[in-house]
Length: 326
Image (cartoon, rainbow, N blue to C red):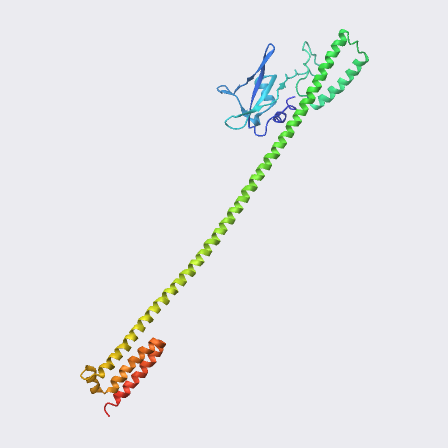
């Protein structure tokens, strides 16, 4: 019976999240009963253990540790031994005594007790056939219902009916528990898949935001480079403009100075009038005219035209100087 009633049958009672188990035994005192938590001492010096890993759940362990009786399992979810409910009560039957070998006298050995608890399929089929045969024989010779024999038979029939109902209910409950565990497993798998999908979508969104940020920084850097280049060019243009203005002011001052010189050349007794009498008035007039024309041309047409006026004036001065000796 230990091979048929093994760990998978008991594990079908366990919730999905259960990782440890304990056991409680029904202790009866007259007409009342109570559940008492069971412990097991391991080894000579071992302490009393109250719970075990789910992998160690086995009929033989329960039978060897605490013997036959009515038990229920207590479930725990994690290493902190958090309690997670109990199982339905179940029976651990006594082992049937070994039958004598063929030809061996049985002696005074008592007959084996009737089977209890879960029954292997082959034994259940054989018992069902035997029950049908016995029932047919009983019905053929059924005593009157009000006779002692009939009353006893009715009592036995009611017990048999109750047993069949209990067996059907237990089978239906086991099936319902198995279906519930499958539903829980499917729900847990669905939840994990949804969580993974949500994490993946979050990673994709975060990556997109990073690329958008990189594009924004790149655009800002490009704009800053253009702004810096424009600013450098503006500074160069401003510097050249300032230099041109300084040149214009200098040429204007030259023109003003030329006018003053011509006024002094025409004034008798002035230094420029005496110089004009020595080098000739045409030389002074050519030099002053050169400066005056250059300053005026610079103010009107720019530095290039002023340079041409200076060259022309210089030529006139040279011609006038060459005629001084004649």
